[in-house]
Length: 182
Image (cartoon, rainbow, N blue to C red; front, side, top):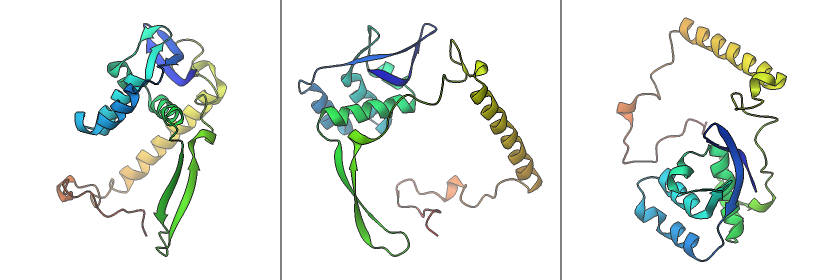
Protein backbone atom coordinates (compact mmCIF):
# COMPACT_ATOMS: atom_id res chain seq x y z
CA UNK A 1 0.00 0.00 0.00
CA UNK A 2 1.21 3.54 -0.75
CA UNK A 3 1.08 6.48 1.63
CA UNK A 4 -0.57 9.62 0.21
CA UNK A 5 2.49 11.74 1.03
CA UNK A 6 5.40 9.62 2.16
CA UNK A 7 8.28 9.62 4.58
CA UNK A 8 11.49 11.44 3.62
CA UNK A 9 14.50 9.34 4.63
CA UNK A 10 18.10 9.90 3.52
CA UNK A 11 16.99 12.22 0.71
CA UNK A 12 14.44 9.74 -0.68
CA UNK A 13 10.66 9.84 -0.45
CA UNK A 14 9.41 6.46 0.76
CA UNK A 15 5.74 5.64 0.32
CA UNK A 16 5.32 1.85 0.27
CA UNK A 17 4.17 0.58 3.68
CA UNK A 18 3.48 -2.88 5.03
CA UNK A 19 1.04 -3.26 7.91
CA UNK A 20 1.46 -5.82 10.70
CA UNK A 21 -0.80 -8.83 10.88
CA UNK A 22 -3.58 -8.40 13.43
CA UNK A 23 -2.77 -10.46 16.51
CA UNK A 24 -4.36 -8.43 19.33
CA UNK A 25 -1.35 -6.12 19.82
CA UNK A 26 -2.92 -3.21 17.92
CA UNK A 27 -6.16 -3.55 19.86
CA UNK A 28 -4.22 -3.42 23.16
CA UNK A 29 -2.33 -0.32 21.98
CA UNK A 30 -5.61 1.42 21.16
CA UNK A 31 -7.14 0.46 24.51
CA UNK A 32 -4.05 1.54 26.47
CA UNK A 33 -3.19 4.70 24.51
CA UNK A 34 -5.22 7.13 26.68
CA UNK A 35 -3.53 5.83 29.86
CA UNK A 36 0.08 5.88 28.60
CA UNK A 37 0.27 9.10 26.64
CA UNK A 38 0.22 12.75 27.50
CA UNK A 39 -1.51 13.89 24.33
CA UNK A 40 -3.74 12.73 21.51
CA UNK A 41 -0.82 13.12 19.07
CA UNK A 42 1.33 10.75 21.17
CA UNK A 43 -1.51 8.23 21.35
CA UNK A 44 -1.95 8.23 17.58
CA UNK A 45 1.83 7.87 17.11
CA UNK A 46 1.87 4.83 19.42
CA UNK A 47 -1.03 3.22 17.55
CA UNK A 48 0.60 3.90 14.16
CA UNK A 49 3.90 2.53 15.45
CA UNK A 50 2.07 -0.71 16.25
CA UNK A 51 0.12 -0.77 12.99
CA UNK A 52 2.91 -0.24 10.45
CA UNK A 53 5.53 -2.98 10.14
CA UNK A 54 7.89 -1.19 7.77
CA UNK A 55 8.21 1.57 5.17
CA UNK A 56 10.06 0.21 2.13
CA UNK A 57 11.93 -2.31 4.27
CA UNK A 58 12.96 0.14 7.00
CA UNK A 59 11.54 -0.65 10.45
CA UNK A 60 8.82 1.68 11.66
CA UNK A 61 7.97 2.73 15.20
CA UNK A 62 6.69 5.51 17.43
CA UNK A 63 9.42 7.99 16.40
CA UNK A 64 8.86 7.44 12.67
CA UNK A 65 5.09 7.82 13.15
CA UNK A 66 5.73 11.30 14.52
CA UNK A 67 7.53 12.20 11.28
CA UNK A 68 4.48 11.45 9.10
CA UNK A 69 2.46 14.31 7.63
CA UNK A 70 -1.16 14.75 8.72
CA UNK A 71 -2.53 13.18 5.51
CA UNK A 72 -0.46 10.02 6.06
CA UNK A 73 -1.49 9.78 9.73
CA UNK A 74 -5.17 10.14 8.77
CA UNK A 75 -4.79 7.62 5.93
CA UNK A 76 -3.21 5.03 8.25
CA UNK A 77 -5.77 5.57 11.03
CA UNK A 78 -8.46 5.09 8.39
CA UNK A 79 -6.81 1.79 7.43
CA UNK A 80 -6.68 0.78 11.10
CA UNK A 81 -10.43 1.34 11.54
CA UNK A 82 -11.10 -0.71 8.42
CA UNK A 83 -8.84 -3.57 9.56
CA UNK A 84 -10.48 -3.63 12.99
CA UNK A 85 -14.00 -3.56 11.58
CA UNK A 86 -14.71 -0.12 13.03
CA UNK A 87 -15.23 1.73 9.75
CA UNK A 88 -19.02 2.07 10.02
CA UNK A 89 -20.33 4.72 12.47
CA UNK A 90 -23.30 6.85 13.35
CA UNK A 91 -22.51 10.41 14.39
CA UNK A 92 -25.06 12.30 16.47
CA UNK A 93 -25.19 16.07 16.43
CA UNK A 94 -27.58 19.00 16.74
CA UNK A 95 -28.68 21.59 14.24
CA UNK A 96 -27.03 24.92 15.06
CA UNK A 97 -30.11 26.92 14.03
CA UNK A 98 -32.93 24.93 15.71
CA UNK A 99 -31.19 22.50 18.12
CA UNK A 100 -32.93 19.48 16.56
CA UNK A 101 -30.90 16.29 17.12
CA UNK A 102 -30.07 14.14 14.10
CA UNK A 103 -27.76 11.27 13.21
CA UNK A 104 -25.52 10.87 10.19
CA UNK A 105 -24.32 7.49 8.97
CA UNK A 106 -20.62 7.45 8.07
CA UNK A 107 -18.84 4.55 6.38
CA UNK A 108 -15.09 5.25 6.40
CA UNK A 109 -14.48 2.44 3.88
CA UNK A 110 -16.07 4.48 1.08
CA UNK A 111 -14.33 7.79 1.77
CA UNK A 112 -12.15 8.81 -1.19
CA UNK A 113 -8.70 8.67 0.39
CA UNK A 114 -5.89 8.57 -2.11
CA UNK A 115 -2.70 10.23 -3.11
CA UNK A 116 -2.37 13.82 -1.95
CA UNK A 117 -2.73 16.56 -4.57
CA UNK A 118 -2.33 16.53 -8.34
CA UNK A 119 1.43 16.04 -8.21
CA UNK A 120 4.52 16.05 -6.03
CA UNK A 121 4.87 18.37 -3.06
CA UNK A 122 6.43 21.72 -3.86
CA UNK A 123 9.94 20.87 -2.68
CA UNK A 124 10.02 17.11 -3.33
CA UNK A 125 13.36 15.51 -4.02
CA UNK A 126 12.60 14.74 -7.67
CA UNK A 127 10.07 16.48 -9.88
CA UNK A 128 8.88 18.79 -7.16
CA UNK A 129 6.38 21.59 -7.51
CA UNK A 130 8.98 23.95 -8.92
CA UNK A 131 8.67 21.90 -12.12
CA UNK A 132 4.87 21.70 -11.93
CA UNK A 133 3.00 24.61 -13.56
CA UNK A 134 -0.21 24.02 -11.55
CA UNK A 135 1.64 24.04 -8.21
CA UNK A 136 3.81 27.02 -9.15
CA UNK A 137 0.81 29.07 -10.32
CA UNK A 138 -1.19 28.37 -7.15
CA UNK A 139 1.82 29.00 -4.90
CA UNK A 140 2.29 32.41 -6.55
CA UNK A 141 -1.44 33.20 -6.17
CA UNK A 142 -1.34 32.20 -2.50
CA UNK A 143 1.78 34.27 -1.87
CA UNK A 144 0.26 37.40 -3.45
CA UNK A 145 -3.00 36.87 -1.54
CA UNK A 146 -1.08 36.60 1.73
CA UNK A 147 0.80 39.82 0.91
CA UNK A 148 -2.49 41.59 0.09
CA UNK A 149 -4.04 40.31 3.32
CA UNK A 150 -1.00 41.47 5.32
CA UNK A 151 -1.35 44.96 3.81
CA UNK A 152 -5.10 45.04 4.62
CA UNK A 153 -4.43 43.98 8.21
CA UNK A 154 -1.63 46.51 8.62
CA UNK A 155 -3.78 49.34 7.21
CA UNK A 156 -6.65 48.35 9.52
CA UNK A 157 -4.43 48.42 12.60
CA UNK A 158 -3.90 44.67 12.88
CA UNK A 159 -6.11 41.90 14.22
CA UNK A 160 -8.36 42.85 17.15
CA UNK A 161 -7.36 41.32 20.49
CA UNK A 162 -10.93 40.14 21.16
CA UNK A 163 -10.96 36.36 20.89
CA UNK A 164 -7.16 36.18 20.73
CA UNK A 165 -6.22 36.96 24.35
CA UNK A 166 -4.81 33.87 26.09
CA UNK A 167 -5.33 35.52 29.48
CA UNK A 168 -9.09 35.16 28.97
CA UNK A 169 -8.91 31.40 28.45
CA UNK A 170 -9.54 29.00 31.30
CA UNK A 171 -7.67 25.91 30.10
CA UNK A 172 -9.42 23.73 32.68
CA UNK A 173 -12.75 24.56 31.03
CA UNK A 174 -12.84 23.25 27.44
CA UNK A 175 -16.42 24.43 26.78
CA UNK A 176 -15.43 27.90 25.56
CA UNK A 177 -17.79 29.88 23.31
CA UNK A 178 -17.46 28.93 19.66
CA UNK A 179 -17.45 31.95 17.31
CA UNK A 180 -18.90 29.79 14.49
CA UNK A 181 -22.27 29.60 16.29
CA UNK A 182 -23.96 32.83 15.22
